[in-house]
Image 1 (tube, helix red, strand yellow):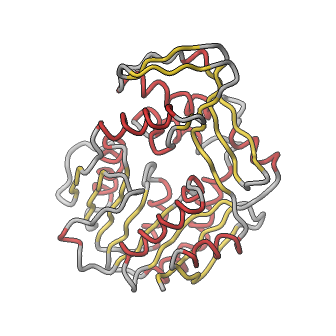
Image 2 (cartoon, rainbow, N blue to C red; image 1 turned 180 degrees about the horizontal axis):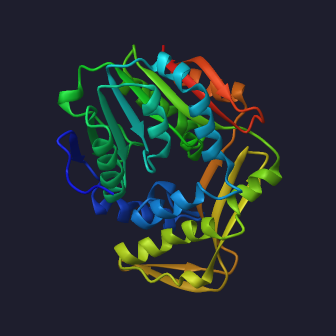
Length: 322
C-alpha cells in the first residue's frame, strides 16, 4: 500500500466520464442480443476479484506468463531497449511489471488503466519501491486512441500488453487496437504482448469455471456495478455465470444467464429478461503462434521474437511497427 505520494509519482486522470458507462450499458442491453463490454469489469471490486482469479490453481495464464518473464526477461529487455519509456496497457495488478522491471531499466514507467483507485495504489507502490524510476500513471480507456503527456513525447517507447487481453477483442477490433498501439509507439518502438494459445477445451473450461466460484463473482460484479453506479435494480441472484469454449470461433465466451423472468430498470430505461436469456460479457480468443502473427502483420506489426512455455499453454511476442 502507498503510504505517501512519492516525488517520482505523477497521476494523469483522463478517466472517461460516467456518461460513457451509462451510454454503453444502455446500448448493450437494447439490442436483440444483449452484451456488456468487458472493460467495465474493472471497477475497484472487479479488479480485486480478477487479482484473486490470477492466483487460482485452474487459471494457468498468469503464472505461465510470469514464468516466461522470469525465464526470458533479459532477452526481452534487450529487444525492448532501456533509457526510454515503458508503457503498460491495462496494468491492473503489478505482479508482472515488477518481474519485467527487474530486467529492463526504463527512465519512465507509464501504466495505463481504466480503474482510477486500483491504478493509483499499484503505480504509487512501484514509485515508492523504485525511487529512481519516473512513474506517470495514466487513467484512461486505452481501447480508444490516447496521447501520452507532453513531457513524455520525445522518449524512445516500448509497450507491455500482458495477460492476453488482446483476446478480448473481436479480430477487427484487435487489428484496430494494435494499429493504435503501433501509432503510439512510433517506428522505432517495440511491443511486448502476452497471447494465450489454443489448447484442450477441458483446460479452458476449468480456467473460466473455477471450483471456488471466483470467476462467477467477477462476472456477476458487473451487474452489481451497474446497480451501484447507474441506479439500476438487477436481481443478482436471478442470474448465473456461464463460460464455455466456442471451438468454431476459437474463443471462450462468458455470459450472465437469467434464471427467472425479470424486469430491470437502469437510470429510467427498462429491460426485460426471459429465463435462459443471456448477457454476453466477454470473449477470450485463443490463437496459434501463426494465427497471431498473421493478425499482427495485418495491423502493421512484424514479429521480432516469440517465447512460449514448455507445455505450449501461453506465448509472449515481441513486435515492431513496419
